[in-house]
Amino acid sequence: MTEARAGNIVRYNLRPVWKRPFELRYKGRSYHRTYEALGVSADVPAMLKLAWTQPRVPLLLTFDEAQTKASIRRAARAVNQRPVAPRFIGDPRNRNVREGKPGRRVNIWASAERVKTAILANQRARSAELVVQPAPPPFTASELMNVNVRVGQFATRFNPREAARTDNLRLVTSRLDGAFVKPGESFSFNNWVGERRESDGFRNAIVFKDGKMVEDLAGGLCQVSSTLYNVALEMGLPITQRRNHSLKVKYVPAGRDATVYWGRQDLAFRNDTDSPLYFRAYTSRSSLIIETWADSPLKRTVRVSSTSRYKGDTLIAQVYRTITENGRKRSELVSTDTYKPTPTEPVVRRRT
Image: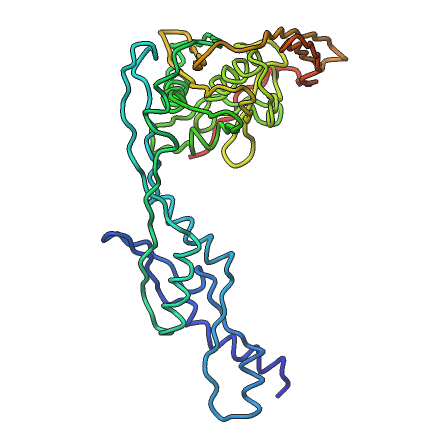
């Protein structure tokens, strides 16, 4: 037969192999996979080459490493535990600090190597232990102790009668509270707050997507990112990632909002001051407040202004910033944003 036909026959007869079950294990818990899901396949060309020279050909396995790691990464979501950073309880000037706690994280590369070793040693292997390592808090309580000067603050209002949205907003605010950025470091909203899951208590509420109002998981959290954006903006911090909503929001002026979406869109900025920055975030009955604390007053003054105009039914907003530091003044155009007209059609609800 031709080499191509021989290859097809080999692949057809190997189908039961790829359906073999395999378990990724951690402390008595099992995450079920198959060889195929782990990226295991046969090196058919190499097997056919051997068939010309010997009567029996071994099963030569190969791995799609990207698929192996992706399959392990999905299991890791259930195993990983974020470390708890130390934080002040209430006003930092009270010096009441809650200690941090270490978390744990699956080492994806080492776990993939362990899976490969197990299967290559025994082509009927059924399990491998995940490699899990401790994840220490990102900073220590002692690093907070010099923080006692409030250097920034911004507040926005929300409607507490919108129960699902309010729950989401308060949940994200509690996660943001205690963020700490050392001099020269960058801050990522998504990295600090983490993924928003229904199992963590997030609910469906209104979000803006592609110029439409739709109901989706964790609606309302963008008010938290927008409030934080305004804190960073008015402190003169370099904004390294930010995007506006497709529609104008009610809680901040046009051009001063920041949309975030897990895995797609982030808010990020850099601490270019010579002091660590501690972010305190909390809510009252109808207000969201984010404060920034440092170990000394900022050596700069910042003025933020904005303009807006309509071009047809599209709103165009521009935000400017003037920063005076060490006797030098510099002005910059921070952003130029466009907003679609607010739709009048009913909200599109997510199917469940």
